[in-house]
Image (cartoon, rainbow, N blue to C red; front, side):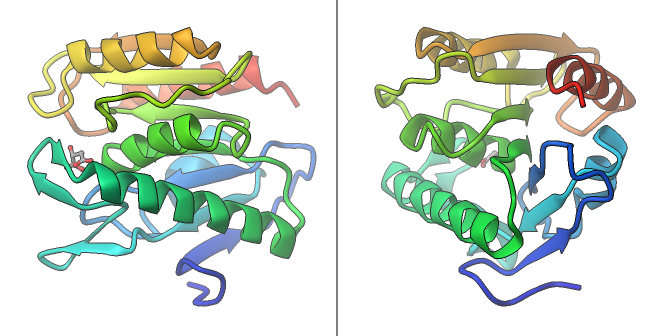
Length: 208
Ligand code: MLT
């Protein structure tokens, strides 16, 4: 059931296994809070799932921040919305008694997760960024020492190109994050390879 309280409409699935790191699920353009729940349950069975809906509407399609055109972001809005989302994570952690979550973001959701990490470095335990771009041209100085981040690009992706994700990976690494960037034989859409690589990475990085 979608919950309308707290600052974002969201779905929350309580942990069956309280020892597992909660997942913050961030959908792509036109998705909503229901989209990534099956992916979250597959990646980390039994973990709590916190899945907000983006508050920006583009022709009726929910997003996490405004864009001026495909791939051209309203960076003032990115900063504002990333801060709002970080506040939501704090609210939800208090409301549901959650440990710091690991973000799993797809496309627009990956971009807001990357921005959130750079602007509010303490908010997340790490991230799986699927088909991200560079959300902020001027990367904020952030201390992400030791924060694990998996970036998954699609070799044939015409929207979130692997080269752009490489620049994001470099920026996050310079901030101290432990970044693994994999380029998969895929386009912009989620593929079985994403699920396999992300599950393995999660099991190795967040054992227990
Ligand atoms: C999207 O369609 O969501 C883009 O690829 C990424 C973005 O606009 O943030």
